[in-house]
Picture 1 (cartoon, rainbow, N blue to C red):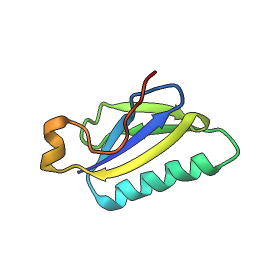
Picture 2 (cartoon, rainbow, N blue to C red):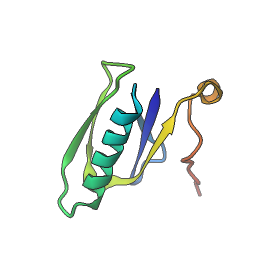
Picture 3 (cartoon, one colour):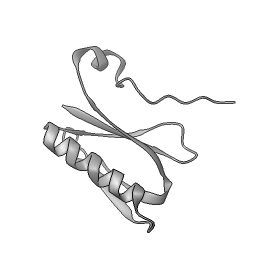
Amino acid sequence: MYVIDVVLRNNPIPLSVERKSEEDAQGLYAQILEAMRSSESEVIELKCDRQTEKTVALLSSEITAVQKAEKTGTTAASGRPPGFFAVTQ
């Protein structure tokens, strides 16, 4: 299983969706990256492969970071893959 985390502007908690295959995860990562690079803002709808009822829509101009990581046994204990963290003031 692969986890794609998306960080939004002014939101310290990343939104996550999971993909079963590495190819699907890489495709979604590339789609989000392309939307971030675009000068036009668009709505991106993400659905989770593991929790099929989980759906989220994002405005591409609000995305500040995206991460793709393989979900392994060590990350399952904490529920989060290593990577993004928030520093609050």
